[in-house]
Image 1: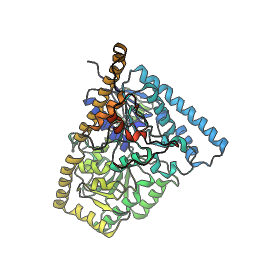
Image 2: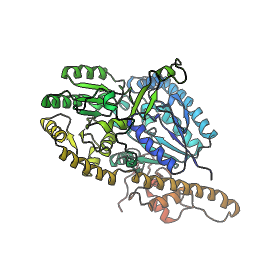
Image 3: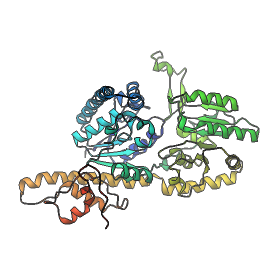
Length: 518
């Protein structure tokens, strides 16, 4: 039997950032479920055996995309300026849409999985192009959200494209929306009146690696002695990652122990106003902290590269100058403790990744941390500042092996319960089964009326809504959003009209009336 073809669409894939790392778990799961997976993105960080389509303009860091973003969200535009930028937006949208649609049609893609595009304004042209493609091809789509544009004032302060942003993410019958936290689920419902399936980020515990022949030289390659504590901050170098807090903590531990312990930053610098990287370089020098910026040698996955071959200078079989690249998981294996001082994030993957690798973690109190910490995990939580208590707790957990072992083992057991890929298995399969059901009902509703015109067949979305109301995923959380679709009262039974009451609450001005009391 031929495999169903599924395309994953993302700005980037197989890179060493949180969204790529999270999307990889879904790629593995789709493959395990028997899908023929295609990767469509703007940049592919590592080679892959999967079928791929690279459209450079999908990349959020594409020069033209970044330039247009700055105009849209930072410039003060008059009427003529808004018209001009609208034309630029549409031009880039079409340049993305045409090759994207062509690839999906030529390869007979039957299902889409969209990674953090439909509610992210970082590449607005991409979001609009994907919305068009979904609408025109009618493809069943799983749309995942890692964060929303309205949570970042950068995208809302100028109001140049408020009308366009107000339509994202779209309310379409073929789209299942997936959020990663209860807070995100509530925000999506409040802001766009869209219901979503809650699937938290997970970790495949079967893929945890230890020290092996490939990574056993990790510390030596980075010049880290056995008597040095390795503090790992597995993030990009950007202002909201608050690297200065990590510098302060390592500095204080160095002062107590009278040693020069090491802070490793795994991700590369990201452009930011005021050149944050230079600020960090000045502070690390002032505090005399040994910092390793490891992005050149830490990638999404392990590989050995020959720089000469990349430049076309090397010959076949020439191994001189080969550079060994480690995976982010190798860094976790060799770290003694993980620091995650970020001020804001959508979920906080490094927290569960640290727990999965049985490492203690120092984490800043970011908005969604409560959803993880509330499960009972033992974490060293700082509230925006490195206080004497935080320094003391960190020193104690590093020096007391028994206490550290008790902490990480307890956390690991909780992780298996709340954030293992078993959760992804159950909820993703439920969504995919619903798509299969939808496809069957759609075919039936086309065939039967032609042969038996007097037989009434409920519209597909009525059937999906009834099925979703019976789903065990989450109470009052149907798989499909039908908020903007009004029931046809002449065709639908009375009870179905009552079930879809919320769809009839739109008033003449386009807003929503208050839900009647039951």
